[in-house]
Each structure stands twice: as C-alpha cells, then as structure tokens.
Length: 129
Image 1: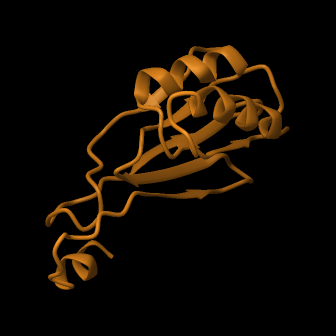
Image 2: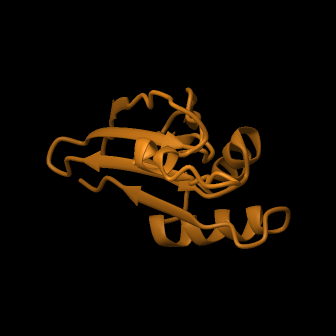
C-alpha cells in the first residue's frame, strides 16, 4: 500500500494512518503493525499498561519498512488502538479506565482523549477465558 501511494506522484502526497493486526483468539497470539498512529497499548490484567513503541511512519510519506510487533494476550488482557492521543496521554487514559469491560473501556478512553483530540476513535479487544 505504501508503494502504491508513493507511485501516485501527486502533490501534496497523501498521508494515511493505519494499524493492522492479527489476533488468534484461541492462543492469544497477536501481531500488530502501525503507520502514523499512536502506539498500540497492551493492557495486562494485573500489570502496568505496555505501549508497543516502534517505528511507524505514515503510509505514503516515503519508502519505509513497517515492522510488526508480536505478543500474547492472556485472559483479562486488552489491546487498545487509538487514532490520536499520543503515547503518554493514551497510556494514562488506559490506566484510569482499565477495570471496565472492553466496550465501556474503549468509550471511556475515547471520551477522555476527545477533549484534546476531537474525533478520536478507540478500539479495544479483550481476551476472555
């Protein structure tokens, strides 16, 4: 997709933010790559939230490699993707609302981030036993 956007040769170049992930719901194995969006945050059931920090430039900006991050979700863990909010702001909001079920959790985090980032979208998945 990155190469296709670059090949358009339009000015200004289109910049696309995207997160792509694959979750095996049987084992909890998860792989995530991002482009231009805040880091994905893994929320352990009983440990501090873990932002998956790494390179992730916008698609279409320049020729780049996009690296996948792999991990495993255990029962009670959540994985959070947000369209805005930056790393520290997102992690702080996640920490404050971590005890909520996934749907309520995502809504509460989105509401908090929307104060500084109107239109922010948040998605969360939770591994259940």
